Image 1 (cartoon, rainbow, N blue to C red):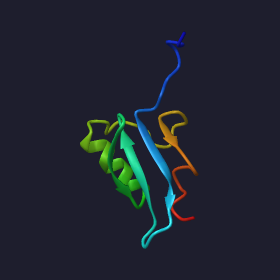
Image 2: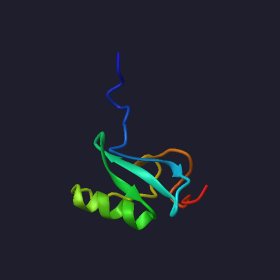
Image 3: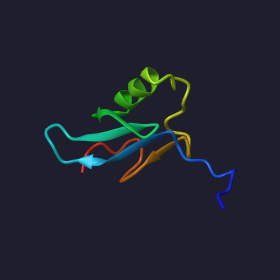
Image 4: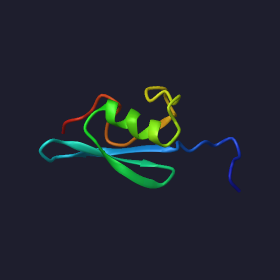
Length: 74
């Protein structure tokens, strides 16, 4: 049985991809929306999805995989 109090973030930021320049894939509501090169890019993707008031650094509001909001290089 699932817990109705359990919250899954709407925004998932995946680990850094070692490319030139490095980036992190961003999913919103289960849909890949783009490649972010900075926290500013994540904020823009959220704004476009109507989540402009989301605090990207508030614990639990975003699922950061492979490093937090300030991890943009391997």
